[in-house]
Length: 124
Image 1 (cartoon, rainbow, N blue to C red):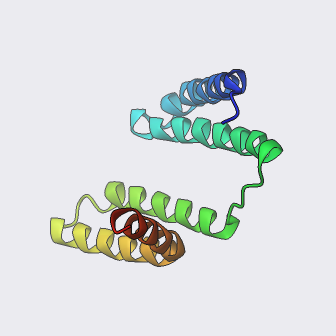
Image 2: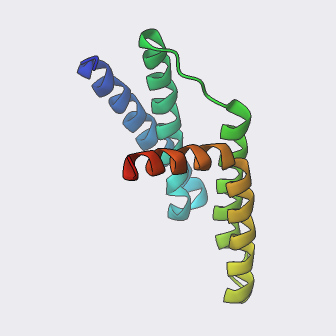
């Protein structure tokens, strides 16, 4: 392990600062329901900074298309919770189930690798 705790602290501080500043802007404009956007922005910036730092030590492959598609799907799922609230619970569950299927298809390689890892660890 590479003990660079100062970098971890600084990226956390930058992410938290961006989150707080973004929420000071977003909450008055859109309401507290959208406070998660500020937190998501802070986490995204923190993740990008940590990815950059990690790549100085070891190469890390990021599947950009998969990453973007999954985040778009998560935004769609969250939006469905707000915009479909006037529809029945059955409709909402069906829509979320369809979104879950799409997310599972997009992330199938990751899901399979996790299942193989679990299988190897459990059945040595």
